Length: 290
Image 1 (tube, rainbow, N blue to C red):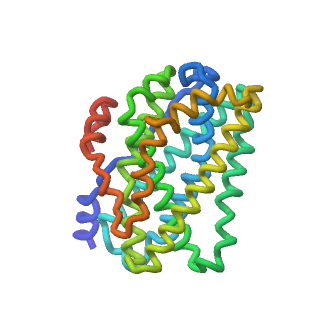
Image 2: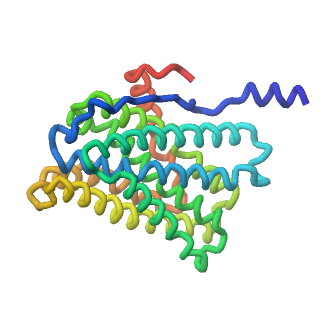
Image 3: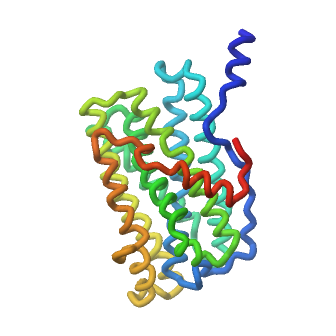
C-alpha cells in the first residue's frame, strides 16, 4: 500500500496547473488595436469557453475510471492536470466575460446559448447511442481546433502586436500555451478506450465535421450580436477583421490544412510538433519549470 502511494507521488503529469488571477478592470472596449471586428472575434471566442471548457472536463471525467485507464497512474495524472487547466481557463474567461457586461454586452446570454448548442448532442443518440464516446469524440475535435488556433496565435506576432492591452495579451498567451500542453490528453483517452477501428474513426471524423459547423455558426453569430450592440454591424466594420482572419495570409486561412489533417485516419495531435514553440513561450512568460 505504501509503495503504491510513493509511486503515485513520484509520477506527475507532463504539464502543470497554473493558478491565474487576471484583473480586467482597465481593459478598454476595443482592446485589439481599437478595431471592433478584431476585438469581437476574440470576445465571441471567449464567451464560448466557460461552457465549452466545462464540457471538455465532463467528457474526460465521465471515462477517467474506465477499465483501461483506472490503473494507469500517469494517465490519471494527465487527466487531472487536463481538468485543472481547463477549469482555470473557464474561470478566467468567465471573469473577462463578466467584465464585458460593463460595456453592456450580454455575456451571460451567450454563455447560456453555448450550453444549448452543446446540448444539441442529445439529438445524435440515434446515430451514436454511446453518449460518453460521442462526447469524448467531440472533445477531441474541439481540442484540436483550439490547440491549432492557439499555436497559430503563438506564432503570429503580428496578431499579438494588435493586442494593445497587456492583460489581454498575457491571458491569451497563457491560454494558448496550455492548450498545446494538453492537446493530446483527450485524444489519447479516446484511443485507449475505444481503439482505432473504422467505427471509432468515423465517429471522430463526424465529431470534427459537426464541431466545425456548429463552432463557426455560433462564434460568428455571437460576433455579429456584439457588433450589432455597438451599432457597427454594417459590412464596413467587418472588413479589417475578415482580411486579417480569412485573407490570403489570414490567421484562420493559414491553419485550414492543419485543421483538416484531423480527418487523416492515422492522425495524432502530436504529429503537429509544438515542443520548441512551447519551450520558447514558457521562457518568455517566465513559467516555472515543471
